Each structure stands twice: as C-alpha cells, then as structure tokens.
Image (tube, rainbow, N blue to C red):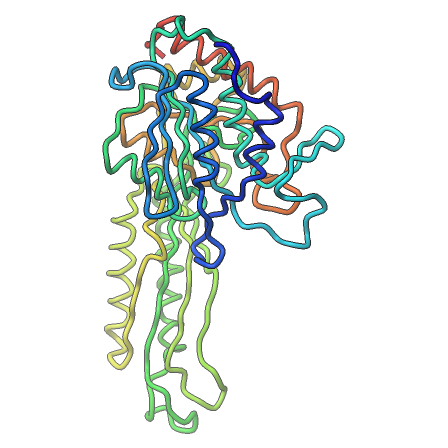
Length: 390
C-alpha cells in the first residue's frame, strides 16, 4: 500500500492529542468523535471502506474494511478510542502530548491503547491493496473504559466483522486467551431512625447490613470452593467489599446503609445467574428482619468472562508468531463481545497494563517494532496468503 498517512510517531501523537475520556461521571465524560474522524480520514486514504456507527449524540464506533467484510473471513484488529480520566497535577508530562524520554513514550492512552491504532495502520499500509485475498478489518470502539457501549452495539447488531480478531490491549505482546468477568453491585438496607436510647423506636440498617455481609462472605467462600481455574494467578473468583456508608450520628438509630462490592467471575460463571443467587440469599437473610428493606442493584451491566479454547488453531498461531505461551489476565476487555459474534479472539498488544490508568502512562519504545512485525505477520497469514485455518 502506498502510504498516505502521517508517519507512525505522528499518528500516535495525533491520536493522543485528542482528548477522549470516558467516565460514568457526566461532568468528566467526553466525546470520542475527534479520534474517530481522524482515524476515518487516515483509513480512507489507505482505500479502506469506512463506516461510522453513532452511539448517542457524541460517541461512535468505526468499522473500516479492506475487502468484502461479508465474507466472514480474514482478520480483525480492534481497539478502543477512549481513555480513563487523568490525575491533574500528578503528571510530569503533558497527558495530551506524546513525549519521548529515554526509552519511553509518555502520554494519556500511549499504552491503553491509542498507540495500537497507529501500529495497525502502519502495518496495513506495508501491503499493496491488490495482494489482499481476505478482508482486513479495523474496528475502533467507544466507551470501553466505562460502559462498553461500543462493543455492546456490535454484539446487539450482530455485525459481521471477520473470522479472527486481535484486540490490542496492552499485554506486552503475550497472547491472552481468557480473562475474568467484572461485576459491581450495590446493596442498600433501609430501616427507621430513632433515639439510640430505645432500639424499639427504630430499625437499625447497620445491624441488618452486618447480617447481610456475613452472608455475602459465606457466599464468597462457597463460590471459591466450587470454582477454580489454575490458569489464573488468583485461581478463584474474587469478591471485594469495596465501600460502606451508613448512619450519621452515634445517638441515632441508623436508617440507611449501603455497601458496594466487586465480583470477578471465572470463565463459565454466568453474570445473570450470580446476580440471582446473590439476590435470593440476601432476601432470605432480610426475611428474618421484617422491619428492614433491601435493594440489590447492579452498578453497571457487567462484563462477562472471556475464554478462547487453548487448542484453538488461532491461539496456537498467535503463540507461534509471538513466541509466547497464551495466558490469562484479571482485567476485563471487549473480547467476550467479539466472541459472542462467533469470532475467534485473542487479546494481544504492545505495552504493559502496569502502566495503564496512572500518572505518566507510557509505552516502552522497544515494544513498537516487535508489535509492528507481529501485526504484519498476522495480516500476511490471514489476509494475504489466504490461510483461514488458524
């Protein structure tokens, strides 16, 4: 392909300089359209057919295809266009400027994960258009860091993208074939306030929460006894008691208490079933406290766990090309939504998750050329050489 995009470093800088923070806090949340539009311009210059899928008023996905996307063959390279918020005042470098210092490239999204788009486009234009026998599809999504609305839209519409997908999250170029799911639940107990000198005057929500938390911890122990996966460093599902708020004065009976928990289910554990189990157990506890009421609600829909089988030919090919054994991670990605579309999916990209979501986020420069070579090899195998057997 004849290059009509900026050079690789300029593409990375061009993306990082465009703020695209996503957050559940509407005062912090930003549009990603500027990133989508510049990617569209670059991809169209490389003869990709580009489709922009609006999400609400100020968000969008992008699907760019070189070749017939309806063949359901070829390779998908996918990433998210958004970043997390940043800690103003804690950055040594400008978060919205790609700064090279030593062997690192600093900037918000440098590793998670705007640089991946630059690498994907640089790899794509290495090949002449006429050499493509199977489609190459580049997907850019919205809101991975908050609601997963971009990936959910793809799943809801059942969009055909390709046969194999690489999601370029930072894994230090190790192929990842499984990760845990993510659930965050709020548990609220409502009672009745009254003077602390006479417990009969009210119904203490804190005492009800004590009984509820005892049951939550018993449920956690049961889940961990029944579910294990040795491929994870922490080989059991986890449940974290993350926050608790209740009461306002020691001389008043507490009328309201809320606890927020985080659950990380293993592959094979269904989010809906887990929610129903939690609800049944906690409702049974509150039956013994008729003056109290309980409300259990998800703080967001939840991200399912993800697994591509270890004997997948695509996983094996990614292991061979990266010279790394496939592994697992604890953090969530958009991979389960691609799997739901029938796409064999691997998470694999430059950079380390250890540098993500913190001040002075950076991408190690020594990751760039290996990532570029790896993506070129994948494109050559699945789009150029017409190999569709993994």
